[in-house]
Length: 255
Image (cartoon, rainbow, N blue to C red; front, side, top):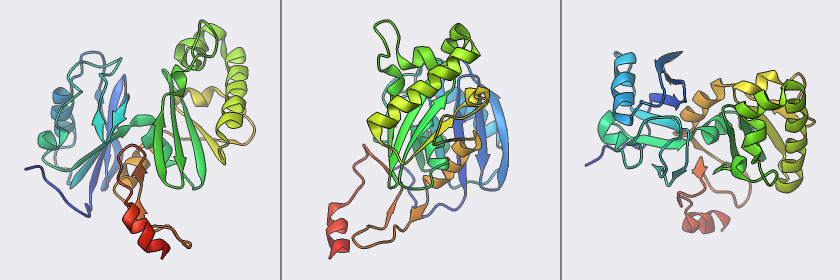
């Protein structure tokens, strides 16, 4: 039987990247790093993480995964890591409850301040997530076609920045942000990822994210937060495709 707990007190947060895996915990905020890359399997990652965090105390684990996650399960193998991620039992490997979420969604959650927020991660590719009143929806906007030959990720990702040059790339970012704002109507847009630092100025009505938001998002995944207001439900952070929203509780709260 897999371990369960209602209120974990100490959390280990793991941010899985293409070049490094970074870990922090409730009592250890300086990241421990291990090398990542095309040969990294989930089993190897768990062993190296446990070695790098030896002596750390934690009751539960949050994992930000660079790929598609549905209902807390990895459903596609990563592009830049080794095989074996789909179907891997992280709870058995760590011996603790585990929540897995798309890495862009985890960073978005860490910088979320309320309302409807769009997150765009300018990194190796283009990560994206939308949060509406605490409900998190990981997205793959980068895979949409920008033109007949190129996707949004082709232009805004690392290779696009190299191909276009920084000046043209910055103009492209501003144009794409404006288009997504018109299409998705967010209250705010946060630009994160390593390449966000290359923006000399931010597009109008956006703010710059920070990589530390990924860790904050991992901690937030285990929080319970009361939403105030008539008809609101006391819920935790909800992943849109997990089906964890309770309509019965909503009806009771609404009276």
